[in-house]
Length: 198
Image (cartoon, rainbow, N blue to C red; front, side, top):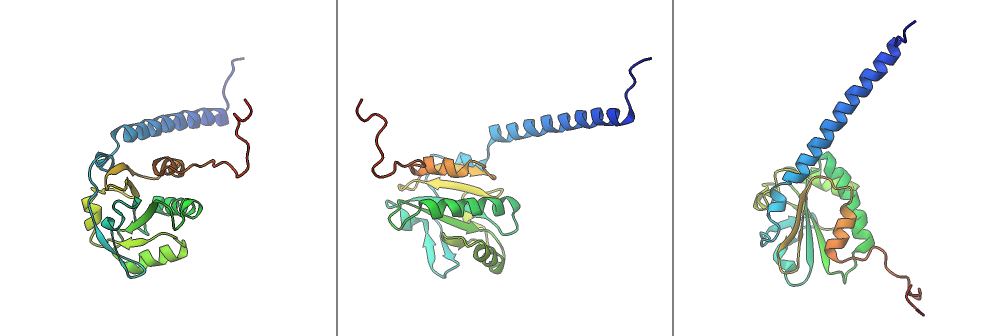
């Protein structure tokens, strides 16, 4: 007798083949996106466009406020954006861990929501600890060539874009720490150097 496959085995093999094709297509799609990058990365090395936007707390914040003082991380987002809802809590945790009043960086979350109430509700519920600015006409987003969100830019204290990226990045906190010069493994006070006594 021949080795005949049962219907569940045939189904399993077919499902595996379809899954393999899907994963291969998905990997190629992701690889293509990473190689193409986007408009955001095209701004690296250029002067960051200044903006003047109202914050949820009522004050007006401009990029020029930080010139020659602090590095600025600018994150464009919206309350209806799923990936933004994943990224902002990671950004908030990063800020809570690493930002002090004396820090040489600031994070500005710029909402492109048309509706202030939607941006405010999300920012309040998520307890975003950094300034949340409103860009309802997308003027600032346009100046930064934002075509998709989340989009994030790191601007040095001289006002030059040193990093620009679009999309959720699972290693964002590590990348930001590197860009901002934050040591993720600081030595504990009193800890001995590995090289001590050698």
